[in-house]
Image (cartoon, rainbow, N blue to C red; front, side, top):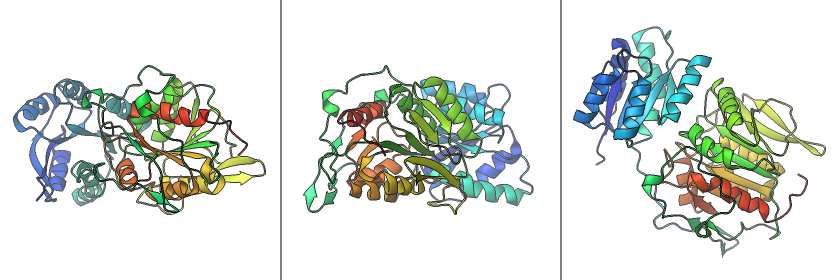
Length: 390
């Protein structure tokens, strides 16, 4: 029997504390250990109650959510924090600041939900999965069965030596060469000599910090485009792209429909839109749609990866980073069977080892590396041969 996840609800609003409390107590896998009306009380109760997860309002008297996150980072870095955000540009900007300070996930807090029942249903649907993602049984690399194709086994590297003390999300100094321990055999391909023409990335919970550790390490002369699905609402994806663009050598932007992919540019799928690629003559262009959700997501990683597979196939480097659930798994399997090179973030540096974990457990990853080394591994793959036209 699993031990219930211990949850502390922190909000200066009595109404929201009550709603969150009701949602938590409605699930047998969770235990509400207490509530707090401000950050000062929150820190006291953290010492007393030792919660696993806190739900945290950012706007509170005496000690706000940002101060709580700063203090927790020093004294209780293992506690997961889900912060509440107002769905506005200012709210999104403050959410990114909270995640930079260590928040694991966030939820838009609509102040006009209506009745108490409407509030309860919204939080039941949106908050409960965000809390429970931290209590699902963790996947491991033990007993991993290598992925096979045509009865041949292909090598896979799993870095098991990354100490937990290195769980940093800020970009480390740029390294021009990968440590020898990270070098692995080239990805298998149909021709045995595949060049790489695109990088496709899927990421969810913990994604903004993971992308902030990965993308700035890529060189300005990156010879391929990057397409990214980050599970995030509309407006948040635009601000995420702007923040990343300010810290990266490559260009980072929110994708718009009908633009041609350019080398050295990363395109982030906008919130609430699937991103797909289409060949148009000698060009590859972006398309957006609002087709039904897949894996309860829009944008969905699988949708993007299928379109990448159709155009680029074995010329793809597929990157799967931290996130809840299995979105991207089927797309990775399709790409792997075509000969793509698959890079997965390791368990130690993932906020949630769901998306990369399922890929690793199925033996679909060519390399499993800490977030600090994802860019190194990607550029190592690109160096192996000169890029051919898409």
